[in-house]
Amino acid sequence: MKPVTLLVALLAVMALGFAQPSASAVARTQAVQKAKLALEEECRREAAGNWEAWYGQLEPFRAAMLALTERTPQRTKGKRLLELLPDPPLYEDSQQAWYMILPDGLQVARPESRVLKAITTASSWLKRRRVDLIFVPVPKVSEVYPDRLVKQVPPSRIVAPHIRKLIYELLKADVEVLDLLPAFLAARGKSPRPLYYAADPHWTNEAEKIAAQAIAERLKRYPFVQKALKAAPLYRVEPVAFRFNGVQYPELTPEEQRRVGPLLDVPMLKVLDSAGKPFEETDDARAIIIGDSYTHCSRYVLKGTGINALLAKEINQPITNISSGGATLQPFKEIVRDRDEILVAPLVIVWIISNCALTDYPDWQMPQLPEN
Image 1 (cartoon, rainbow, N blue to C red):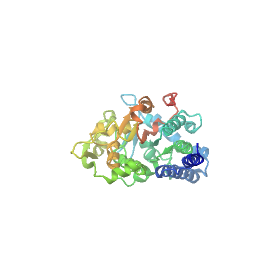
Image 2 (spheres, one colour; image 1 turned 30 degrees about the vertical axis):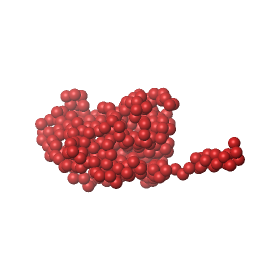
Image 3 (tube, helix red, strand yellow; image 1 turned 180 degrees about the horizontal axis):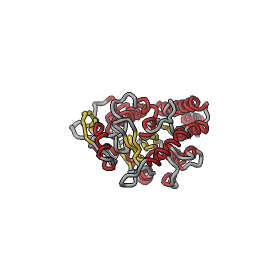
Image 4 (tube, rainbow, N blue to C red; image 1 turned 90 degrees about the vertical axis):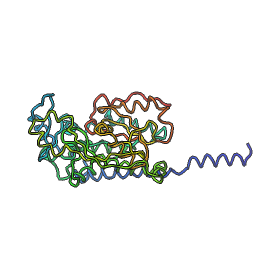
């Protein structure tokens, strides 16, 4: 090789080695760092920076929640529906709130935690394929409105420090996490409607709008979203009202059904495409939402509504949804199985899952992932 040719080749290699990260990569790093610092400050504010002490401070809350659960009678299907007062009340299955009163909740944030390992492994595996993952844990109704259940609630209303610690450990492992709890706690006093259904375990359109806007802000760092936002709008919204009783409604007594009545007519935003048809997910979008029923519940309530539709409107992009009922790794396993068809272009995957799933149970056991 001629000296000049060799010099050019060496300079090319050096340029690759010292290439500047993209603007989207820089923005991602900044988002992770900002969220990590916010949680460190939160822990300092609540317990002088001591996570164990913070968890210990919430023992009166957990004891009160356990006592409430034990004195709440079982319904016809064996469920215990916790009542969030005052009227009109909200009802939550006690099993959905159990993640907040675990005797050793901090185990979920320890290095051996299957939850922590699974999410960090998924993020790293995708990163090697130049696919970004944004993990979005969704707090349950009892985590956002704890003072409507028991009195032993701190002024901050933050009652699950073990979940906060899990988020912190994920961020330390360079997993991007979109923390919805601060926005939900702020919105609960401002929103004219509850963020959750009265007799159903899922979030309402009010909460979905907050989440969609927050996710969209993260996605706007990507060139393909920036380009789409400069184009003609693909979608428009139409305010609608829809009566939705919820899956727990049949478990309520006639008097309880009367009391929740004012919350059953639910205002929603229906997203329509340019032809006026309700939004539908596609199979080949560059923004993919995976997760549990929180990602698809609303579209079964009313077609064209829900987090997928709202996010599509926010970023002017189609959305692909890969989800399952209940919290499992199945959606991620489907991506791994079909990786040659799905992971073919610059993508971002948004993993939405309810916090009640963030306990260290066997379904979080990550299988061996392929190298290629």
